[in-house]
Length: 294
Ligand code: THG
Image (cartoon, rainbow, N blue to C red; front, side, top):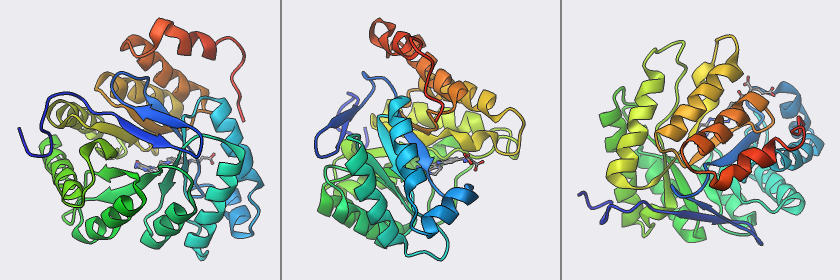
């Protein structure tokens, strides 16, 4: 056993808001991290956020929580905008409207820092990866604020093609986190989902990496599944099938759109079919009334 994991037991990750803790782990339903608060690919939202109009952000926050998001991803990466200031503003707004923990999503270290400074509770930082610069910039912040962090399976050489290559990057991130005083239970590994239309093995590589990371490192895992269907028709159908396969491969959280009914069904069905939905209550509850469609 590698030094990243002393035992065989699977770890739990706690994240929290000021008033609520969410436990991520193999004995819990796969947690939905709502992906909607992200201007990437949403021209109207990006323009509104650039103008300081955060009404759609507020509406998306409330609707995603109503649709079953346990955590909300917040990304303020609008081109030509002061991202640190905007992310802090979004964090404050969303925390005033909902009590779910937040996942602070930025490639800009200064934005993560301002977001963490503003955040009340134990945040999930999205993300670090195996690049030297990124490890040494992000991990001290994660430690300083007592946060948890997502580690992407890529490094200075790019995204490895094989599950073994991605697994090695995951192990490096966990080892470096430990060097910075961050416990492996506070690191979620993201195998990185690429479009299956461009690379036919993209789905299988993710599923094999999930099994390796879960089985050999015992840490929690997460992915943003929507990328898998990029450029293809019926994206929700592919996303839903892929999401249920990631649940079967041991994933413990997913970044997804709970307002998209087909994807949500894939996650909830995965939980039922993998014995992660006690008495099927999540499934039954979700079908009691028409789901919120935002
Ligand atoms: N891993 C981690 N974080 C991530 C990703 C990941 N963060 C960003 C992304 N990938 C996950 N979030 C999204 C958000 C939106 C979409 C996909 C992934 C998306 N949006 C529609 C589009 O671009 O076509 C637009 C939706 C709309 O207009 O309503 O697909 O992999 N750790």
